[in-house]
Length: 481
Figure 1: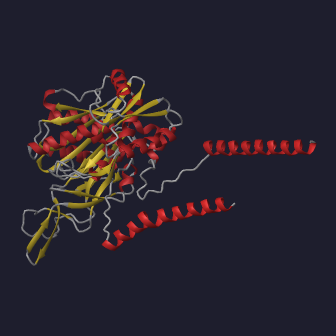
Figure 2: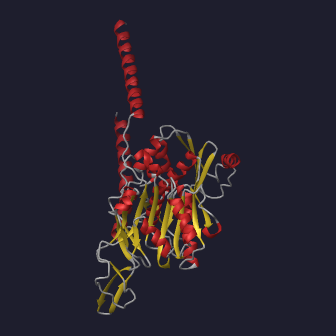
Figure 3: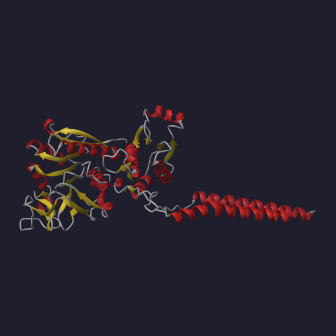
């Protein structure tokens, strides 16, 4: 009997130790684990900018996935927001609501927020602040007139991080869009305005139209100013208003020049601050077997030395329409005394040059033309100091020598990313720069008739046969025992 009790006690102790080991290992694996993103395009990896912001999050945020399960991007949205929850240091709570299946929860959310929730989207809340991101704001579709446009890129992280910043900050920035100065066409003017409004929704700023001839000064609540593709020049009074705003403690100006416009005073203002539009046309031309070929559409690259566009350094940008070259007066002592510095942002490929006689059938390079390097965009900073903690008080400007970047028919994702990076830099939001979009790729597998037959035999005959055979062997061994 004592021996049997000893054996039983030993078994009980072994079971307790095994359970303790099992529970301990599971506890450790729950608290300490590693995760790997093995997807080809790193679909489940957050950018460093988002990770930095989540690590410093000081307020609790609730995120609701209001999506029908039949949505093509539901899985990606759910996986993305799971990453936000995991990296949010328990500050980020994520809940999923299907408006079709979870009717009661959806109605309760409508009552709490006052939103209709009539379409798929993501709701981000922090206290009383809220932001609803529609499904269309999370994707980029192919261009064209087709009613069934395919999704080519997923920009969920960009939109959600911007919404997160907006609800935590609790203040919507304001950009004033200058109107009344003409444009290449009504469609171009409408495209530029609509694109800035869309960017405002994603980057947490409000776009308000402003006619400089009807106001006496740039509003004090202006976080930035848009002057996009103006065909007509600013008056002396308007230039004075612009100069007063630029010399204020904190100013942000985004300018897209139209080379065909008559903007002498605006060009003089830019020249006084370190960037001179040359008035030529950036092009390449050659004689071919079919005649002269002159190309105004410019393929360019981003400058790696500029921090706020460094994440775009591996991308190329295409500028449609006409562009003029920019001269940067970065070594001017008078500008240095005013703490004004200019940096190139976009440089044309070496085969392009700045042509003065651009109306000729086959232009050739001569002495009056501008040779590479040809700069097409530049940044200007006034009052910049080496101490990063003081740079929030500097005035900043982005100048692009092309008016077509926001045209609906030619705007690419990289154009939008470049403009978004420039706007975040103007608003001193470097922490929100560098969130890339994820490309959506479709793969088609071509199978021959023999491959179809092989798949059928493996899946329908061989594998079920192996399982049946193993089952028969088990049954036979037990029957023999």
